[in-house]
Length: 139
Image 1 (cartoon, rainbow, N blue to C red):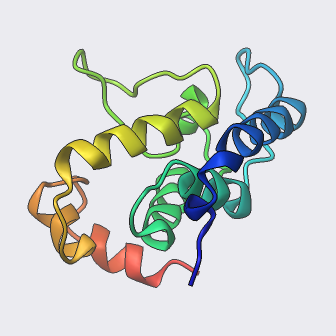
Image 2: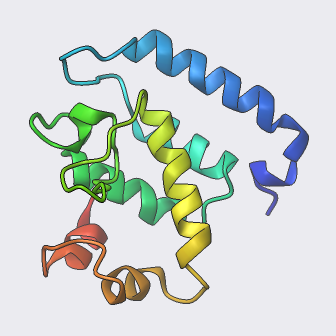
């Protein structure tokens, strides 16, 4: 089955389109929770960046943000994945699309293949001991 990544030449067009959609829907976040993020937009951008196990990663974004509706969470910083900064606290991104890009970079650096749930558990992706179970039951 061909994926969007087989059409690499479309990547700039897709990324620009998604950024414009995101900018129009979310706007600049200034003291308010980002809204209008949805699983289809997240999935499309993850695929454009060549992220592996996209369906699992989309579920991570849903779980980390409470279906993109949480307050006082990583979403306040346009951080869909709960990334923590080296100083503690959630990493801050100008727009949610930047957190997707960071996830792609992170995954390429640390994931070397195999069962993705096992990988996430092994590296301690989340503090919640039931994270993998919850991840499997999202949707």
